Length: 198
Image 1 (spheres, rainbow, N blue to C red):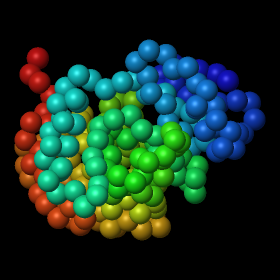
Image 2 (cartoon, rainbow, N blue to C red):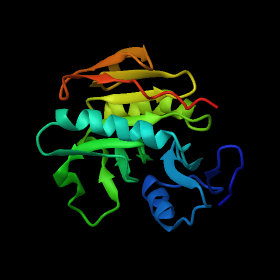
Image 3 (cartoon, rainbow, N blue to C red):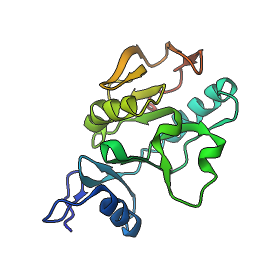
Image 4 (tube, helix red, strand yellow):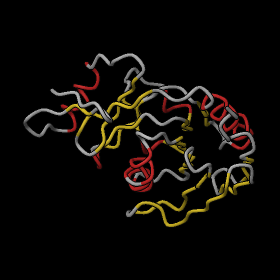
């Protein structure tokens, strides 16, 4: 396996099956400050988030918790969701799923069980968050994908999942309200999502 520096990925000389990549991911000892996902047939390492992302993730969880579908929970905890049909495994920044999803001894959770997912972009993750994950989350039937473009300071909600990704999207700059469709049926206030002043 090799480790690349810009946005580190790990791949072998021969193509590996998705199951083999998942097994490699389970065995991987990560460098301090990194997390790992499977994207397009490679294990991709991403640096941990900036400090203020914690505030933003907390605001999203607090603001959406009253609107969760019955029996669902929302968290910013590190969990790995697998999408075998697309041979992907993501650790979303924020995720909501039915409580039953977490009643397993496996660390590979069912991506199709998600009712909501949010990603906060960084310079190293932005391209995959804007492309690969839009398609995979949509094809898996995740009702809402919230993409927070931290570089552009705008929020986009993707909804109406389909075989091609998502059919609907709505973008608002940070500080404005963003409508979220079913199963949340609420408006998300994006006030406080901006970076702190230097």
